[in-house]
Length: 336
Length: 191
Image (cartoon, rainbow over all chains, first blue to last red; front, side):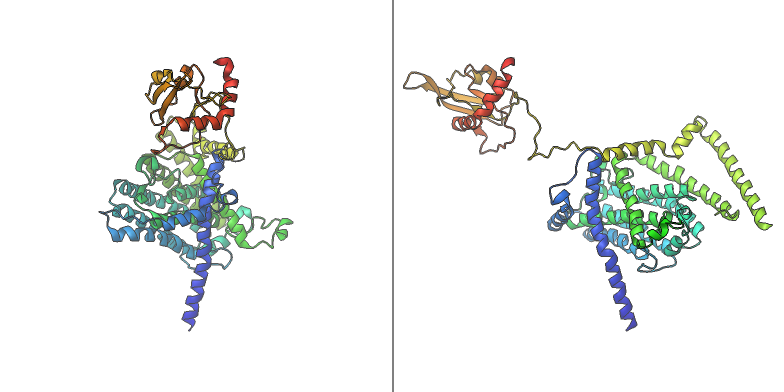
């Protein structure tokens, strides 16, 4: 009986995460088109409802009713399972994310490790879709994407090693709690280089501009999902945007103190903002990074592929390794 | 004082790392100046780029909301073709075939005969809209200002409406006469 109650509550909790997440993903696409439009002296979608607010719904309906084409010489089973393999880890990763103190589906002690496993699994979906499509463009895109994700995973991993060292725990909630005190205790200050490296590799991890060589529409049409239409395409799309929101949320958790109030420790203002629930702070901090992703896309041209690899291996990884040493010394000296 | 010793060791190690980095920098990148190095590691150029798009975000947008708003059009705009009439309803075209002769795309086909009142009028005036390149030479050649290019730009042509016959062209002329007259008047100094 207890098992059933546990199962039921877990399913309910998951739904409480997944349903708002899918809504956020839908409106993230709208936000992206709006923000990039505004930065290019345009207004973006504005015909479906006031300010184009109905655009994601219209897009979703269109994708739902589109025919699902399967290339003749493709491997049908892998072709169909690849988008699911791409979306499932992107959603599963949210299980260990704490939205506020105690608001977490699974309070795992190895939360960071689990997150890493899940974000890496996403590469399989991309690789398999590229392989199964039997298309040169898709294959090239998948190869690029896999190489890129593997390269930047290392830099990202090292950047998070810095966080683990400072927090002394792999539990996501514990990492946030370790940052409490005041805004100066958030890790973006003592771990500034790690923060920058984390963010650059996070952009690369999600295959977003300026590191979107996997899609590279000017060279390889759309990359790995070039042969997908209808819902297959929609699933890849959902996975990409869910991952974008996830890395933004992680940046807020690891470096900007998660659900902690920015006025913590400030004498007069802290009690004034005490009524604000933690999740609001977390979402506001996430919003900064969510916006930053779009801002980056509107600003920078795509990296050349070899430059991308050079940046990952020759710049970011050495910086993180160096800073791990420096951090170790700082911990030894009792500064951190 | 263990802590004191630890602090000393930490400072010493940090200094060591700094020295190694300095040596590495001079050896691996001898041409790079200090300012250049600082610019690279603070992502200076990237921040400059971000500030440009960031300021653009708040500026006025240049979009013209098309069906509701339109961009201004020159009186010389060469759009949809039309045949005009005189104020008394008589068609202007006298069947001189100058436009047919001058048309570089050979888009015009004219047949004419004498009418009962002794004037010459066209019996057939076909323009192949797919051949027409909207160069306006026919308008310049016409001695009676009959064939003109209106400033009508929002129209579609398909295989059904590809051949514009005399009736169609006259109908367009009737519909747009006020516009045509206004544009001709506006441009008259330069003709």
